Length: 167
Picture 1 (cartoon, rainbow, N blue to C red):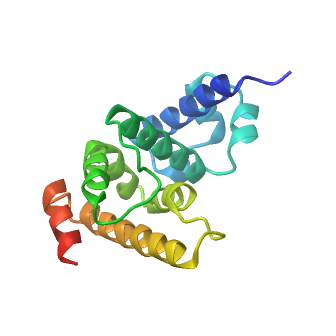
Picture 2: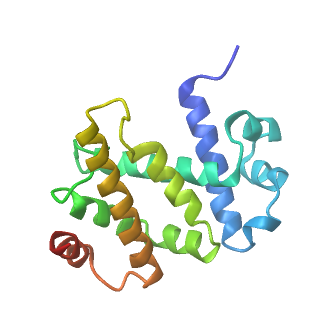
């Protein structure tokens, strides 16, 4: 008999939180799976049953944070991005600024992109115009986010939204 979905999600988040804690003091390449599992209070099997890479663990955490944030803010449109909801996107990312800075210090932008790809990319079987539009905004916002983080969050979320509107 397997664990319930709620238990599985909890254990996966424990693994993600453990990895993030370890990243604060160690390079990602030096962090072992037994260390992550031990700090999370689970066995290595739990890690391997749920994840195939550390980037996947981090992407899972980013997606969970986004889902919680959109629920707290009662945001209905959370899988599609355009100029109307870009501010929401930048506000969320600013709210997790320390985590994003940590990922960038560790050269783990791939985890951020992976979360974009898993959560925000279009349904390729949908109308072609909708798919291309979704891809355009998703990749564009990722590029803006990448630059914003690289620049040390120099602008406010509102200023970033203005940049999107100008573009």
